[in-house]
Amino acid sequence: MEKPTYVLEFEKPLRELSKQLEALQQQSLETSVDLKTEIHSIEKKIEATQRDIYTHLTPWQRVQIARHPKRPYALDYVGQILENFQELHGDRQYNDDRALIGGTAFFNGEAVMVIAQQKGRDTKEKIARNFGMPQPEGYRKALRLMKLAEKFKLPLLCFIDTPGAYPGIESEARHVSEAIAVNLREMAMLETPSIAVVVGEGGSGGALGIGVTDRVLIFENSYYSVISPEGCAAILWKDGAAAPKAAEALKLNAATLESLGVVDEVLPEPMGGAHYDPGQAAAALRYALQKHLNDLRGLSVPQLLETRYERYRRLGVFEEAASAR
Image (cartoon, rainbow, N blue to C red; front, side, top):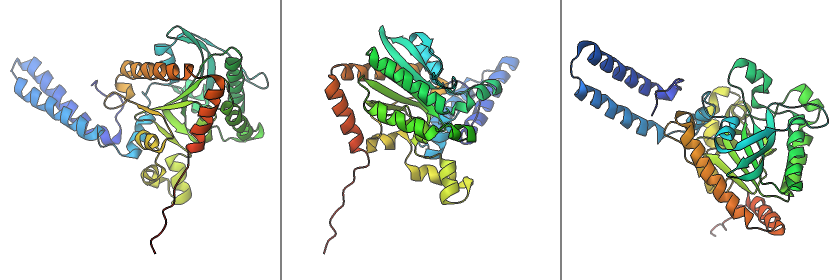
């Protein structure tokens, strides 16, 4: 595991142990004293601490990892698992939304259509990409590309990573909720295989606007939720500090979502998160996408639509037990 460059609050014990290890290694070099026993002891302690922290993560801690500034973004995965990505711009109505990008590419030699929500790394790029929050023209661009994929029978790959659609006045004035609603309807009837993967944050309708697909995958430390933990805390507890409690109540983490049937597969991450080994995370994604594409490729269009319909009809189903008399 590489040395962390950005440390979350719950990772601080690891940082302290890493500092001790570095100090011992430096002392051994400078004094030529054999400190192998002490160094090995600290290394063992670091491994044990890593296992203890990362195998007992709370829902809120996983949300923090999903938001980690070094976590791979959609374009990082596109660059690693796809070839010849050609970005297509604009919604042909208003503007080109850089928070939601798309275009054609090749996946293991097969032509595909890619739609992805993209955040920024530095301040300039964050502003240019509106912090990964698409506006209505982004969803209309996505719809245009979905229809293009349908026309040319290209499988659709969607990468979800957004805190939510942009809620500003300009976005509302251009009918962002209507743009998302149209996408939900059209994706439900799209006559081409589709897969969505939540690579980071999956916030509210902003995520769902490109997420009504045949298969939904999610990385182990990503989250997918109707509202952010902070938003939920502000509404229910009138206090943003209750976000950890809200994260627990929302059932937004990958394993829980899989057990509820909201997602179809949880993709493993390197210990500590995908940012510790992006190549390993990309390899897991490549394998899963190929597996699910192979399954979907064997379905006729009527079977595809019927299976998709049944998938979403199952969500939210519950049973009531008769009370004893």
